[in-house]
Amino acid sequence: MCGIAGMIGERIKDETGPLQTLAHRGPDDSGWTIHPAHARQTRAHSLLLHRRLSILDLSQAGHQPMASADGAYTLVVNGEIYNYRELRQELQQLGCAFHTETDTEVLLQAYIRWGPACLGRLIGMFAFAVEDERRRVLFLARDFFGIKPLYYSRTPGVFAFASEIKALLEWQPIKRIVEPQRLYDYLRFGRTDHGAATLFRDIKQVPAAHYLEVPLDRPEEGQLVRYWNLPADGPLDLSFDEAARRVRELFLQNINLHLRSDVPIGAALSGGIDSSAIVAGMRAVEPRTEIHAFSYIADDPAVSEEHWVELVAGRTGAIVHKVRANADELVADLDHLIHTQDEPFGSTSIYAQHRVFRLAKEHGIKVMLDGQGADEMLAGYRHFVPARLGSLVRSGQLAEAYRFASRASQLPGMRGPLRLWLETARLLMPSAGARWANRWLVPSWLNARWFRARGVHLHAATGSADRDMLRGELRQNILETSLPMLLRYEDRNSMAASIESRVPFLTPSLAEFLLRLPEDYLLSPDGTTKSVFRQAMRGLVPDAILDRKDKIGFVTPEERWLKTLRPWIEQTLASARARSIPAFNMDAVQRDWNAVLAGKARFDFRIWRWVNLIRWAERFNVEFV
Image 1: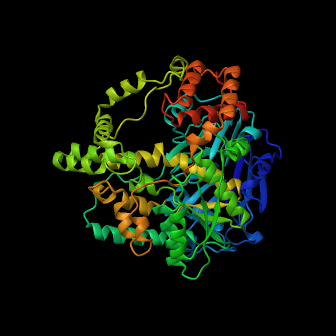
Image 2: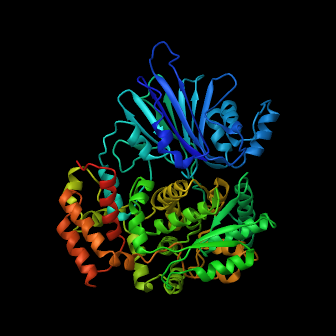
């Protein structure tokens, strides 16, 4: 695990600024290499930089940048290749010789042997760059799900990349101008991090499951290529029990791979099904190892999961470390958190996660396992229920749809059958009608005229056109709406504490299997989420947790916190008025805030998005043009 950066350009000095900016990502070692131009027709030079967090082969043999024996290939990598032992053995049989015990050298040899095709053989989380002198390209690749970040920018004559946006902003002369479409997507829908764009107009990212080849002699060129995608095939023909057995097998294989480390490993434990399964899986795979788990405990009994955390600890023998937080601590840490995250984030639950990783660092942990991705692959969120109902309606199973709606609408977090049918109808609407409704129902606090003048699409993504609507919604959540931003939060919060966070649900084999299961294996006929996974974990995870119907996670009492912080919020809103952020209609913002305080309007995440966006714009000196 580490931070990487690099540059191709005509005017490169020994500029190693990112080595300091990214120091938190790799405090154990650093390195850089600069290559002069080799082609007569160009004056371009290349620079590769690396910060190391030592996890495998802690010796100096793991120093990066790492070059091939003949100097034709130079690699910097951020992440881990979990199946490096198996790949190493395969490469040795093909005649490759190894001089270290690192996964870095395995990746380098895999690229030399197979080129871009090596990506399909990897199991891991990674963002890496190879300067390939044979082909005269800089090869950049990002893992299947986008667990590890990879940003880039182009300024006249220069191509630069880095693990974090702040490194590019502090290193390159980039105009800090907001990207209007991304701004609208965040403020209106809370969406960030999908695709190639960022909230900075002149900074892009390599999307998940893509690689980018930049010619060393023409750094202004380069094309993104997708190398993997989620399956679009129909459901597999196997029984529920057979599916559960296979899910258990794949999950425990993943846990085993993700425990490969030369340093101690801990786990984030919320007390929900996913994190409990990870801790229980760790115990099943390593019966005698000492497990340290780290938990956020909310100060509001209504959302505290301390009881469930203790239940898991009692079953697995895990040593649990707990952290609590309050509104004043949030404000004290907010500027640092905004700097850590680089872009605005969805809610104050990100702060709870931030504190969990800080606690783990205080106890000497360098690797953590976490449950990101399970909800998106196993239909763990309540908003998947309307999609499942839509699947039943589209397939003509109307009697089953009625029974499903009647039962699922009674689950915690649902708001009755009428609301469920209305949500399903919205998903089933023709896309043109949905776009029209979204376009003209823009909230008054957004300056729709400003956004329209910049060509912004004022609508959200509509429901899946597939007959299997739930499967389509899962794909959208994995690729666009939910998982990309959660992975960014996870990466920045963990790396701010110099911790490698591993997410064992996110492997291609498990994702491909789950997304080909019949929909009712994921969302049962009574609306129970993660049905096949609950069955797969019987005997490992306490039944009381597997039978839970509620869903909490690292939830903060956000409404109470923000109302407690009324003076701070009003000061933030006043600064936005003075700064004249044109995306807002500040009079409407103030009216909405006053109505929430008076109990005349419903509290929701829009309030956090306002203040987070304002403080982010101030922190990074963002221009709205």
